[in-house]
Figure (tube, one colour):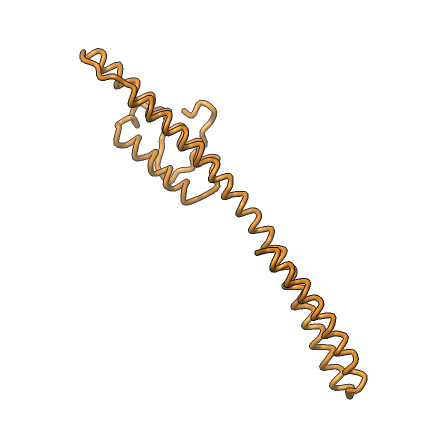
Amino acid sequence: MFQDLTSSLKTGEKKIQATISYAEKTMQETAPPGQEQIKTELESLNLEFEDLVTKLGDTHVSLTHAIEALQAYDKSCDSLLKWLKGVELQIKDQELKSTCQEKQAQVNKYKVRLINIVCHLIQILNSNSMNETKAGIAYVAYFILKNYLILEILPISFTPNAHVNAGSNCF
């Protein structure tokens, strides 16, 4: 699509040059007030065309940046999906325990795993440039922390709208 616009731009430039050539021929047979009018119109035409070329270049740069951001986002989504599948397998591979002590140990493992999930979500928040995704992930992290009652065991204060800055150890 951009190549089509570039091609059209070259065609437009040729048409501008042809218009200037025709205008110069016309001005030779035109009275001074008309010559001034033609010059003014040509200057306006050139300025508008230069503005169009500049805007097209700016748009190309913006689109390139947007495509790169989208590709990075897709890559992070793929990475997240792979990570989630790994966590899912770890959870599904857990066998049910029969004694209270074994069950308590398993609950503690789940809490640690949940904290690791939240840490991973926070790392995504820090690395992701898509604001809608950040808001969604912040809400999910807050929901997990709130509903699984691990807020009291974490040495942090976390709200979904707060700026999160996770270090390498997360908490």
